[in-house]
Image 1 (cartoon, helix red, strand yellow):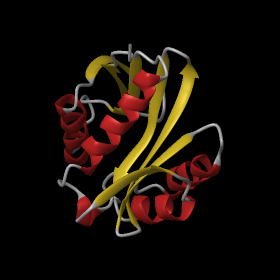
Image 2 (cartoon, one colour):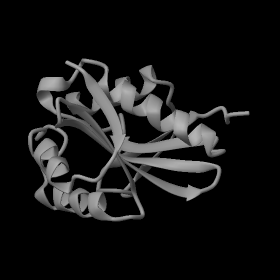
Image 3 (cartoon, rainbow, N blue to C red):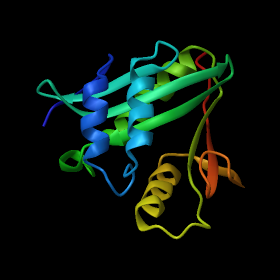
Image 4 (cartoon, rainbow, N blue to C red):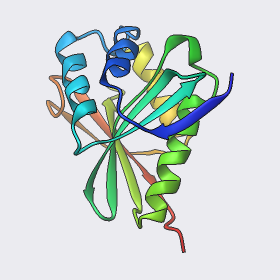
Length: 156
């Protein structure tokens, strides 16, 4: 497997990957929203490809020059556990650092909601340098949302 990380838009691949991950993206309305976002120029779209096939997707939204949000990251089931998510995050943070960004945030389901899939997600974020900031109820959905942040050292 040779993974290439590139800036490109592929809403169809976003839909395919999210539909293959029902433990995380079981809600069709949520999937539709991410597909719309994948086509939206306000989001930076970064893909991981193996021999031309998209195996990982990510969307970044820049709120301020100093901060950005990881709006979406998803890896196809057959490519999970191979370091693709980490590679996407490393590419994202390196490029954000070059542009003066100092924080990358992400929202996910909070730990007060007992769910094995999202426990894996939180573990992944912690392993790649994100720290929990705060948990809110009824923010992104009717349950708890955990906001995590990763400091980024700007390029000098």
